[in-house]
Image (cartoon, rainbow, N blue to C red; front, top):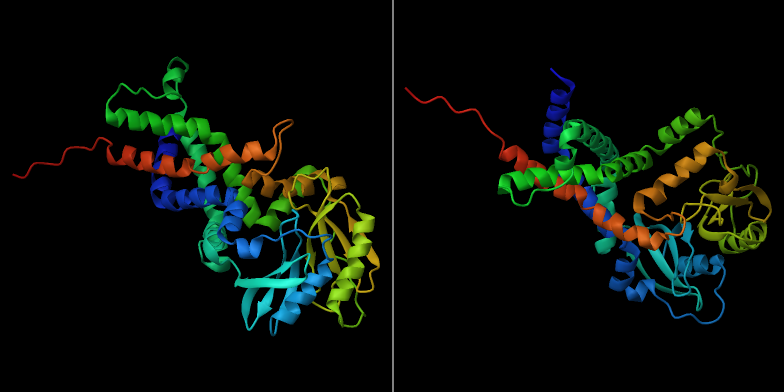
Length: 370
């Protein structure tokens, strides 16, 4: 059996088996490219505030959420990037995951909602884990591998003789409907192949983050980013909000050019407080640089992602490339997001045209009854 025949069978039956779910992931990804804007439009009472003076430090958000929600156990604070955005405090209350929204100017709780709720939250859960928790998350990773196989086998099947190259990349609209559909599938697969490979590789890499990082470090001879420092021997936090504010002052002084995105609270007695941010040279929109402090506000270590080895920088690039949040020279991220959103529908278009190609394929005649 020839390599082209093997590729054709793989492409056909893998597409029939996984094409619908891969198309669903692409379509939900298209929505999520503009997910933040959609979420703000649907939930202005939680996600929009009126600027008024200086923003309070993140400890104020932690205090407002803890006082306003009975039994609240915070673990993470999302910091606003824009003046009209609130603080978001993530945690648990009564056994359920909760997001608390706090006005950074008036230090008051705006409201709460369950984690991954609403239209955008449900869409994200569908895209990232097929609404199936960690098991669904792993399935999504293997679907990324399946999309890689579909793209690679499709290129092998598509590869034409040089004399027919022009016919393989365009659609003959004057042909029959069946032929137009075939040309659409073949040409669209060619023009979107690079994007599909990038989408599949980055998506699978994000799911299998640890193994991907180890592989990239091994291939590039790079050192991994170090694990968090330890603060073993200290007493439990008595006033988490005050500890966060002490660390906040130290972190912003040490990385004064960073735009901080999250504050991670200690989950155990040996864990530090982590301030995550983005330095100007970083590609990741939320940054992968960290300032680690103890509860007294002393800086334990600074991890500058912009100065990391090649392997970690490639690993940190997976997320922005996957969602189209990066720049290419003079082309800003906003200009890249639009084609990224459109191209997210490519698996759906290829799935429909591919199914029709299979459905309309020539079949051997059935034997006539005697």
